[in-house]
View 1 (cartoon, helix red, strand yellow):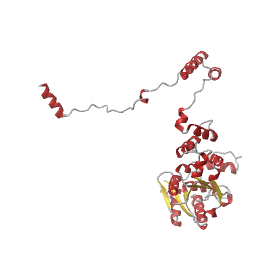
View 2 (cartoon, helix red, strand yellow):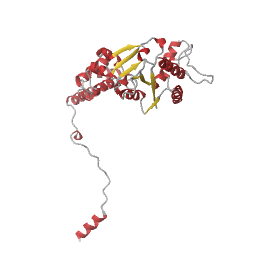
View 3 (cartoon, helix red, strand yellow):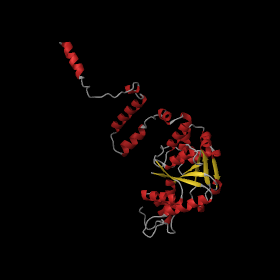
View 4 (cartoon, helix red, strand yellow):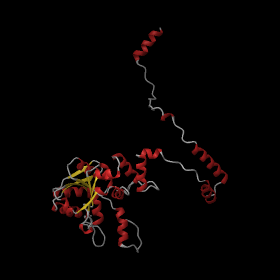
Length: 314
């Protein structure tokens, strides 16, 4: 899961956290690699000349196995000890180009359970340690790095930094044909450059948004960074949200002239809206007291207590 704008934000405020080098510079290192992300990359990148995925005679996709096999060999040749962590058709017209087809097909690529199991079997046969993560693979890789079992966590997902690995490696599994250097991001330097605590950094990532959680409209990386620096946390940002005055003219234009509502009713509603917003928010009783849930069922009387009460009455 990529965090929108985080890479650029760290480069801007924490340039010392970044280093670029080649694969050979990791000589003798042990690295925990997000295999689920690798499989996704290989299914997209490892293609035939016509843009189709590699398949065997039975038509089964083999792009993920080809990419995993040869890239792992390349790392081992450079004396890098990888440890893999795994996580438990578009309609185009005749005029669509190969580039357009590939662009849309990337959005449809999914790693199946079978492909995941095939990759694990391949790694085991190659003698490469493979760890099944209980949840997200990048979190498991980061934990291995934090525990000193490996030098770094390797993933394309910037949210890996939220799990505090000493180092995050990006582009490690890219093909050499792309000629992209490996990026190393040092977590401590990144946090120091941003001048944030771990909790503030996580709040920043949440505010920036990701592939599965859209960012708030009008809040880009610069604004998100400014808000966290100014208020310290997401909770404080929420508590300091400012309500704007209703745009009465805009309401009339939209609701009356464009949508045919009664002007008198809209103006009346706008006045109520303005009055309500000026009054603020009234506190609730449960905001001052702790609410305790009680059992609605009546407590059954103890037989001994009931007999004793009858004797007293006599």
